[in-house]
Length: 84
Image 1 (cartoon, rainbow, N blue to C red):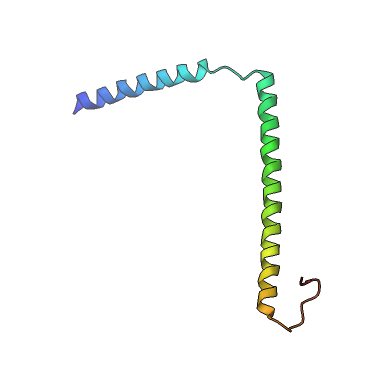
Image 2: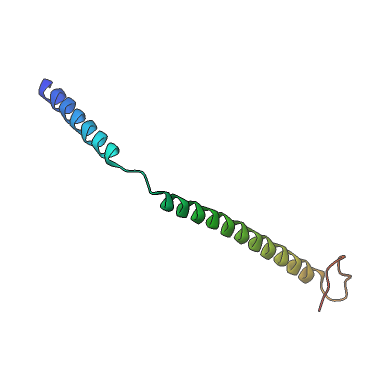
């Protein structure tokens, strides 16, 4: 039992040392790469906003089309909805 605990402690110590070395060898990104990543993040945010606007427009049009189908023939249309 003692051998298992001692082996676990040694293994844990070795893993921690290896991980510490890996973390310290990671270098910082160059400035141009950081700028490029910032521009990509900005572009992705802009695309997400535009996609949300498009989907909101689709929901609105779908709702209008559903309301016009429910009205049927010869029934007055709600304000702002034109048939044709």
